[in-house]
Image (cartoon, rainbow, N blue to C red; front, side, top):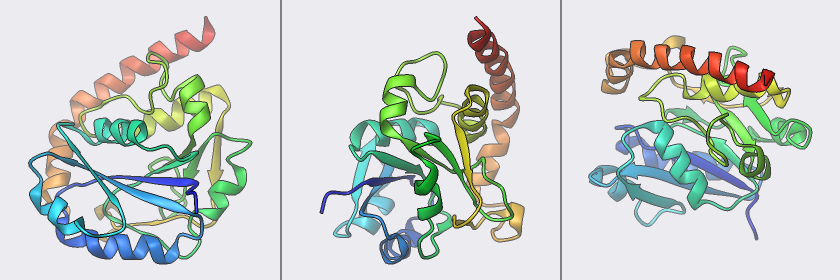
Length: 216
């Protein structure tokens, strides 16, 4: 069966969780799909964790989650892509509400819990290839921030263009410390906080630029 949905998932120092994540996705995703783990070339733990499982492992030197998303998008071919993380849980039929509106809204916010929908998006490939997810590079999914604001720019720029939709029903469960579901001292969160000011400044500058771009 030809797959319709690519699940793009950078690996972020949680190799021990990946086999259960693969099982969870396959058990609860009702749409024909392919899982693409995108990992650093030196991340042997993640590679070994998914070796032999029903998924792809894309290796390279990416340096950031955003760059990994872009690499996964370029490697995959499915008409719809979900930008995942390796700290998600996928309830039964999680993707169906987003897919039900994606013909009308080519970038859809997927509920990550607590009605927050700007962290994980599902996108339509034909739109990204034709119109881009960013204002300054054709056919590109996201801007390569160091860590933060990747999803924020994708969502806010889509809203400014009138191509953003939200799937309040369904969605995933984000096992994040914002919701009391993870240890805030995990290395991933410490790394993200270290580059927060730089990413915030980059986002502020780019927000001014894309508004000017849309007004021109």
